[in-house]
Length: 314
Ligand code: FAD
Ligand code: NAP
Image (tube, rainbow, N blue to C red):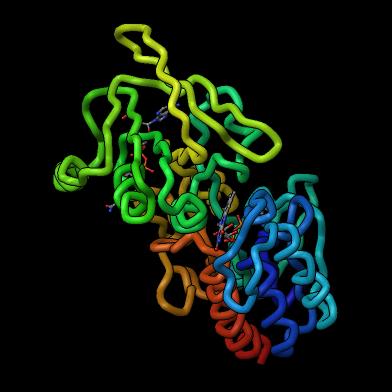
């Protein structure tokens, strides 16, 4: 029986592992399907992690995190978790995709989320090099420059408003002429002089070179006209999938409470609606989707898990 199972090895999972092991838990395993580091390793430039004064890549930022955790006894099992279940005695079953299973007194779910892709040419190639899914992360790189935002939901419009405060101009590109976003948000966007709405248009291709993006070609769905926007930054906000699959039970229900967008409901201690089960980082409600916040969540969850496991074991 593990003291603690951590699902996911991004900033939240790694920090949970550090605090749990350094805080005294002995058998702590972090199940991560790939190399530890998480979503930030896709970024070529990070300049908002406190204490790191220079601009570093996500890989560089995360390089030492696993080493630090392992020093205190965290074990990393490179395996995908397919499901977490609750046993009759209140402990948990961690089911792996390879058919194996491990039991644990407590579980921290730190599986993050996945921004959806719009599916245009070059989108994947330039991700982290001019194509972004995070205005808080990358907006500042385009200070006083022109950028494009793709999407017509609340996220796209709210992020366009955020970017408009930093950038010279924001082209908001939406495939229809009606927005999903709240009417009040649409009005705020319309009232912002440096946001230009380009409606009924779909992105076709982002292009550039080794240095990054140089422009975005979009196509008007009604006229067939192609427009070439010479922007160095393209922000894609076409939906977001919370990685909550491990909490799905055989009958389709979730092990703990999730909200209408699939985000795991937690309190300020990262406790879910099920005792001994915690969620940390981008998978939880109200996540700021920042490395520093995910790390903080991981620490908070681990501190609570230590208390819980010690009490459970007596
Ligand atoms: P993640 O980092 O997403 O980690 C989750 C981990 O769980 C992943 O490693 C995944 O492989 C693993 N996992 C998922 N499901 C399973 C499973 N079933 N079994 C096993 N493992 C599983 N933030 C900033 O603060 N500053 C920035 O400049 C910045 N730039 C960014 C640039 C890019 C291109 C991207 C994509 C994100 C950026 N972010 C930035 C956001 C930041 O990366 C996230 O907020 C942060 O990584 C969230 O951490 P997390 O641990 O919650 O989740
Ligand atoms: P969303 O509401 O699903 O909107 C996605 C947008 O992207 C839609 O306008 C969609 O166009 C467009 N889109 C999807 N696929 C595309 C593609 N391949 N190419 C071009 N455009 C594409 O997603 P979201 O904005 O991330 O919001 C998710 C949920 O969170 C929503 O329920 C939202 O209300 C909520 N949210 C709320 C707040 C808030 O209340 N403050 C803030 C953020 C998010 P169509 O409209 O044509 O489908």
